[in-house]
Image (cartoon, rainbow, N blue to C red; front, side, top):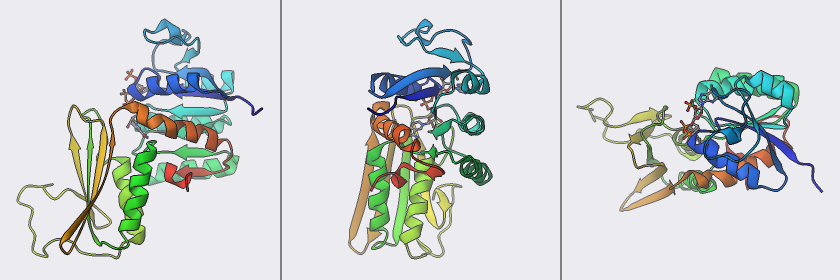
Amino acid sequence: MNKEISVVIAGPRGKMGREAVKMVEGTEGFTLAAVIDRKFDGQKLSDIEGFSSDAIIYTNAEHCFTSVKPAVLVDLTTPETGYTHAKAALMNDVRPVIGTTGFSSQELEELKELSRDKKLGTIIAPNFAIGAILMMKFSQIAAKYFEDVEIIEMHHDQKLDAPSGTGLKTAEMIKEQRKNKQQGHPDEKETVTGARGGEVDGIRIHSVRLPGLVAHQQVMFGGDGQLLTIKHDSHDRGSFMTGVKLCIESVMDLEELVYGVENLID
Ligand code: NAP
């Protein structure tokens, strides 16, 4: 039988964190070893309403890693904290699975190097939803045949970064296949700043933030007399958990940083 994977979750009281706690507790082969929160140091998770786990709460990540010695950290907090936690995890021989996005290229490079030096897997996953990963992969295929493309990503209004990590990653993947093209009319003028969205590698990304939304994206390809729309919707946070589970399992076999769940599936 395979060894149990002991997991620490950072941000357990958050919307994603609560789902992750449920998933880890309900998955054979995973143990919830502890959680990292910014409150309730030393208490049990079950002291907080809605939880039944006896996992201990730590407010100091280093302290948690040195005391509990988990195999994997799953971080579902904020971009700044995700980076700090990932670094602390690697320094303490814990493999990070980071679900927060918005890292600078310098931070990413630093984590890549640390992961390589330590020979410890790290996964940074801008999107854990397998359906969203397929949307990106299908978009990359479509980009071979359609040069004109725009991305519309829509999220709940509590999201801190725009565009979304998934939107950026989609643009990056499309760019690998798409011939460079100046889209739209050459004399186009924005009469309202931002009306045409943000531009990444010549690809427009439009970010919508509204209550009632969860995580949605459309990639629209235009051609002569035809429009191809590739669309994905996450209706609730349960949609991300198959990806979180896959990352926890996969990170154990990695010895370097992998950016994006698309690099873990065929
Ligand atoms: P949320 O409901 O606001 O939860 C965030 C949690 O993190 C809160 O409980 C917050 O505590 C906690 N937190 C913040 N700073 C912390 C720190 N320094 N130490 C410990 N805990 C800390 O947000 P969410 O919707 O669950 O999303 C969480 C993160 O996952 C976000 O960065 C989001 O962008 C990302 N996300 C990723 C995916 C993906 O597929 N990769 C999907 C959805 C969301 P307080 O309540 O005290 O503030």
